[in-house]
Image (tube, rainbow, N blue to C red; front, side, top):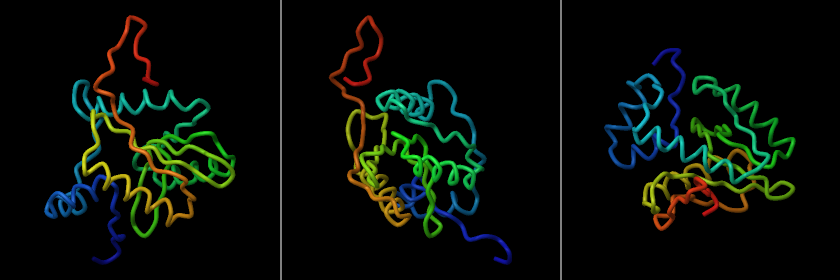
Amino acid sequence: MGDRPAPYVTKSKYVAGLQCELRLWKQVYTPQPNQEAKPGTPQYEGTRIGELARTCFPGGVLVNNKANDHRGALERTRILMSEACPAIFEGAFEHDNRRIRVDILRHVREGKWALYEVKSSTSIHEEHLDDAAFQADVLRQSGVNLSSVSIVHICNKYRRGLGGIDVNK
């Protein structure tokens, strides 16, 4: 492969590979350009749910580096962790050619963090467990001391009132 760097695996590629090895191969070797999600698409709604979930963690900071600035996101995440930021949104980590951006990493106490993987579905699916396990492994291998791993999803019994959405419900 010459001077080409080794391919990296993200949590999305990992889960895709569990579903179909050819799909993983295509995502690694013939990647499609990143596109902004269009309103009404599942990706757009997932982003919106993630933004709502962040409001449950006051004082949190978003690592808003672009997708192609993984190195900058790693450095920003490292700084926020060293400052014991209450919560880090879209924090970046890498270990052994595996890259992740975690939805929410909450500082629990000195040296301990809790991972929250946010899903826009109303129940937990098998691939959500695989996704969270992949992230937890990368975090632990990166030296992050996890106290817990949670999957956050939408409560299908919730009904929005006149005052708007109560994300805690």
